[in-house]
Image (tube, rainbow, N blue to C red; front, side, top):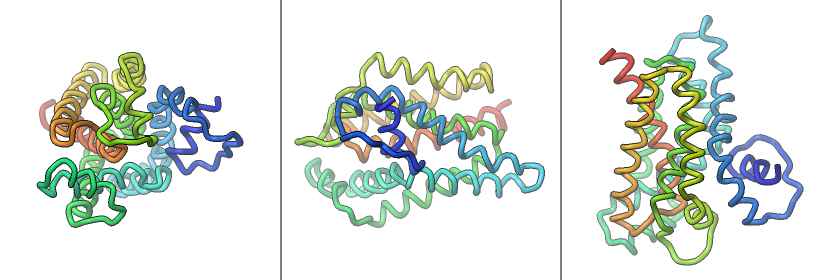
Length: 244
């Protein structure tokens, strides 16, 4: 229970008191709950869906993503912005890591955030809105997959290091099961295909980042969370709206 509460406290703005001293062991034990945190976030994002008979689809999509931004505190979007600034700087590994650590946001970071928000709003407007509950689960299970095939790119300690170094085969299998079950229940065979293609894209992207900076960081894991969500809804749109 301590581990779950710690994960909720760290990764959401849900007002839950964590009356224990921080212990990295609890964080490590809580990694398996990361997809569950996604399910909690997804459930909150579904609240505007109850207004679908009153409001138009794009408005529902906007309210759902506004809920996401609030409940997550834009934590992973901050990582996405830092990663965009670093990766697109066209510098060497050391300089990229230095740029990513800078708290100031650059041009590429702003462009990345804007593009991500527009992307999510547009594609969410064209898919079955019920899928929104699964999207954060996919993002967080993809983060575990990415961490499990990477090493920590920086020197020193940090929450990112604890997360990356303690994601392995067991955590990846658990995260995949937690994701595949609801996706297949909602979309059946289509869901199996959509999620598998999403994981494949994240695998390729993770290998590319590893090659560029020698591993992953907390920022790039946040980047993976956000990109996996966008990739998932894109494939859902592609398969369900255009192909089928």
